[in-house]
Length: 448
Image 1 (spheres, rainbow, N blue to C red):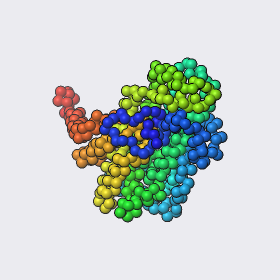
Image 2: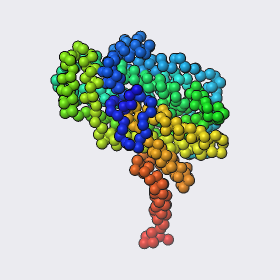
Image 3: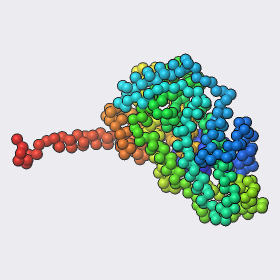
Image 4: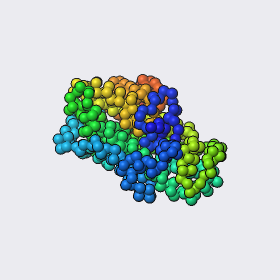
């Protein structure tokens, strides 16, 4: 599997980042601009995935840059063999765990419950019910990648592509759909909640566990099944509280991804040089009537975009926000569970190892925008929230979520304890200012 991010290029921006996990290139154009050009074809792909042979009609998709019908079918076809519907007993156990988790969290944070209803989803249900959230996140990226690719082509090449532009658009939609479907099928095998990827994917107010995956997560942990389920319910309920009562948070995360998309640019001069070289090496040059020659061009490497400073800034913002969310969840869950859940420390360590080796959130953003989440960022964020709780209390800690400008920046996470100390100084200054405002003015003639 390719390890390039959404679109093109290796994700080697930061030497501190871990090596990419086995997530592959689920949201990228690896298949469209790489594997296909390397000798495959849309028909080859459909032949390798049984359900695709019946979906060739979806080549006429006109619903956007990603063929979501194909994505759904592809994901579900991957899950068919191992899929287990949720039972009534599992639904009851999930509901009870989430209710108990909410009660415990009431004593760990002032943010009220964000759960209005509970659900125990099967893997197939997870795919079907999260598609709207994926669409709002991925469609703008896919659209921008294709637009950047076509707009950067020199005029001569654009004219050559003109007769098959419609076919290329449909091919792109199909290949994006195939890639996303593969990704969702893989994620559906691993996610244990609706917030595992760092964003809430369920309908608003819905707390979710995936019982089949919860059982797989618990296997080999040597902890009771109900304890593992309650630990995961605490994480889901904590995430739901944060996203429900910090209304700007979801949008800020999506905006960071879309800001990365807006920065996608391609060097036209490099395109012209590379195109001339690519065409000279093609037998017969580009033939608009021959898809193989088009695929050969797309896979030649001339369409790889450059990363801009604006994109780097968007990635830093995205990484910081994801780390702050994860660190806050770790902190409040630890506080809620410390005297109630005997195996909390062991379960928290298992979750940390899962993230370090590439859990669903790490896989998603590594392949979506090439962002390899650094474990140090996650530890520094957890240090901020833990120290804020210890030194200033949970109310002061949670007040930082009242406005995005109050949150630690990427630079603040470099020295997390300095940030916490400054919060105490700011509070003292605010208190002194308030006291001064309340004191009567001795020069006021009306005093007394």
